[in-house]
Picture 1: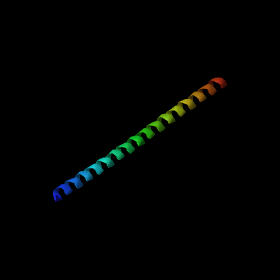
Picture 2: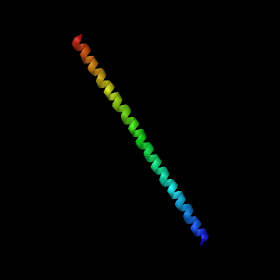
Picture 3: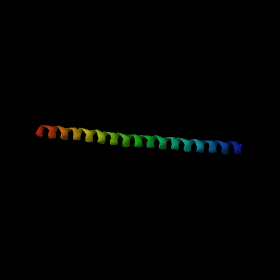
Picture 4: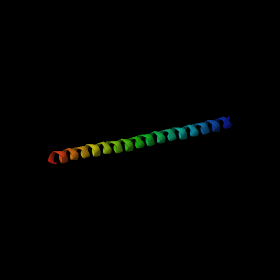
Length: 61
């Protein structure tokens, strides 16, 4: 009986740790995605800014 209790505790512990790992992985994925989005957004703004500068240069030419 004590062995079964111990086994159940171990299983619960492993389960909790697995849940924690899943949560960590999920947070990491969200973090990487947000970094990626920020980089993409920055690049888009840079391209847009460059295009604006180009059109100004062409207009002032």
